[in-house]
Image (cartoon, rainbow over all chains, first blue to last red; front, side, top):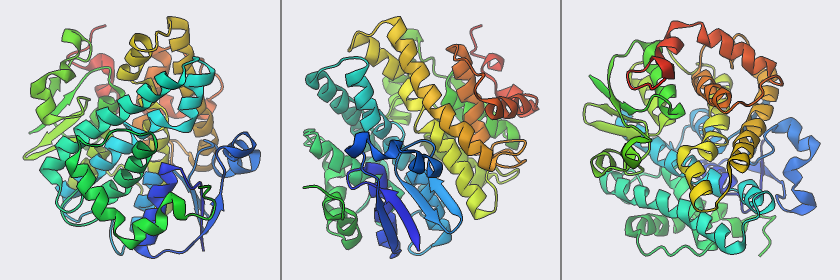
Length: 214
Length: 214
């Protein structure tokens, strides 16, 4: 059985959980609590699995793999139905680019370890931290909304769920948690609303994980 | 003919240039100067092509695509020889994960726009900026070096060039530019040295671009 080392609130783990739920893949859920014990991701035993000390990590037999997008591509190749990437090459490229607009240009900047560095090393206050967080979300969502005008149907790329939707829903969960006003992003809001009505997205939601603290 | 909107010093554009050079793809090089005119990437005409106002952007016929890793995957599917991803599924996954360790967990944090925000909005000084830069490089390279122990041959994944090498060489170029001591990373140094001896890597190097300012 697959093993997924994750954390209920991690956006990156959330993406992989959605992929597993869509594909009907069962996995053993191993919680790496990012805030308890100074961050369980820093423990040496986890470092053996993931020397970057981040979540998620997937174990499938002998394969131990980090990076949510690499994990999703692997799952899509190993367990192809239903696919998370369009067959048509330009739409396939578009889905990957949209996913990366969030996973590369937005999420890493607002990650827990970065916020910790900003606070502990650079001494920024809560107000500055909030501005930082909102700044990168707004930058990313502004560009994303414009790109959706070219590509969206019911979901980010046409009418099928792709890896782009798997990145968008966790990113919006994050934005809501940090109280970003979402009024300027009608296409994003529409897509996220439709995704949330689907069972796999509900199964993967942070509040429905065994390690959730509500 | 392909059009590549890039900048000589952009690590992300550099990755795509290596991919094109390996595949023998000719492209029209359009320089988007990230420092001139307050950053040409912010100009409205470029925003039509890339609403995220970052480089690179690839144009291939009707397809206009951003995100270097999505561009590389697209090129690898559209122009498959030589491939930049191993055929074997777990090595393929490993190559993607290694690439993302740099392209997701390291590079976005040290990007020009982030350094600008840190300076202009948070008022950090040169010393703090350097510490920030080195911190994320060291964090990424430390984990990368450990992962190479499992996967490397002549290059990051075995003895064939993959997308991981396309991300590593520009990241090390960056690290050298910011004077990161590289003594702790013998596997990284060996791979980068071997890559730099290959003609496609030389063709794609920043100093060999028409818009280079040396």
